[in-house]
Length: 198
Image (cartoon, rainbow, N blue to C red):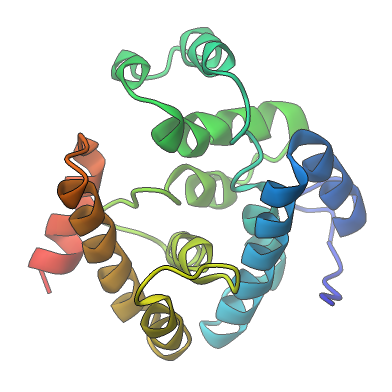
């Protein structure tokens, strides 16, 4: 599969050691998703001149804390004096924003670009780095995804990363609105910057 050699600059161990740590933290179903996201992220990194090592690490850890309890997320928000408004949200927001803090603390990953990509992978931000964009998109288009338009999203992702970000942002907001779900303010800012602004 992926023959990515880690330099030791962003994670102190090997890829195999990181995979083992992630596997311990997740159900088998979620772990398989993470491996597929890594494959998509590495492919996108090569197409967009982004470090494949950073893409691999961010992809493997993007859902690292996804299956933690609500109480653990709330404790982390308080312990690290994060924005108290986060307490009003749930796992969909927490596993990215708060998850980056957990990844940093438990896995010793401190590279700001990798942590930002983890933090931003669910709702994005108005200004995203290429790494942010490709983790956001890889999570959406990995080969296990089979929602309507998944194939369109996949084709876009490997042809034009920015167009894929726009497509995903629009798709996610439409889904949230059609389901009458509360929309996290950052998701609206991402929409305004990427969709309304293009």
